[in-house]
Length: 293
Figure 1 (cartoon, rainbow, N blue to C red):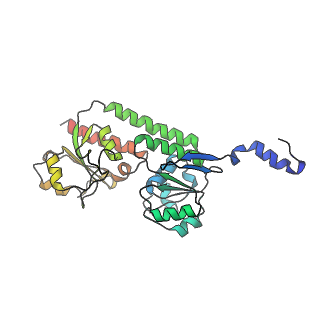
Figure 2: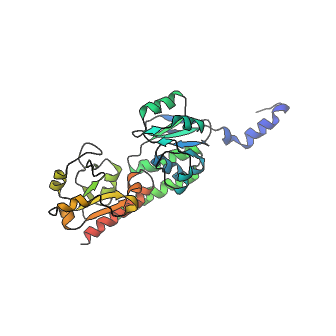
Figure 3: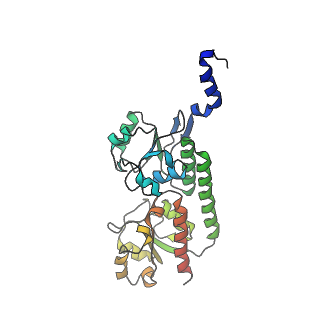
């Protein structure tokens, strides 16, 4: 490449800093190839899980906007809020001038997402539904943020951690489990849900694993018929509360008769982030308690 003298400084900058101009691309959860002219420097996340994943990708210092309940890691709590995942404050979001918005495929309002698309906002949709997709999402976010070193290392740490748990419980005694997502209306998960995959990882047999809906509504009567040996639910910090007290009226159910009503921290088990590894180990420990008695 030749340069006129008046362009010499510009040419030197091109030679010394080629990555400044390098395009970065990654495929999102909707199969769309998202390309940015350079790594994102101002990232907005439209779900608490997206916030965690961007931080896990090593790009936490580039996040300029989050939604309500983005409480992990603690640094996320100090960031500007742009509404919640079901209703985005578009005016505040646009004023923060993000160069990448990380959206949640099934969680964000379609009309508002469409409006952001019409405005030309660069968006990357996520929806991890397997352990491997958690790792690959972190990797792809790190590519878009230019933080591959940190992101790929964290993705591999999670990948290897899950593999170790899978090997540890490969031949574990099966335990019949009912996971309560919500008390009223009563809701659970099937085997396609990430929580269902965690139960399977630990040797748990999800008594509603074959249901067609990912988060089905059920009745107390069908839980009684299924007769789980363990009932699990999420709570703040995994502390016992009254969410499972209503089952104590059914003393004929195995889980109640054996006092196998357990709580796990709600955020780690309900978000598709690296903290699923921590949540998996806790659930495996709960099932081990049952196996030992």
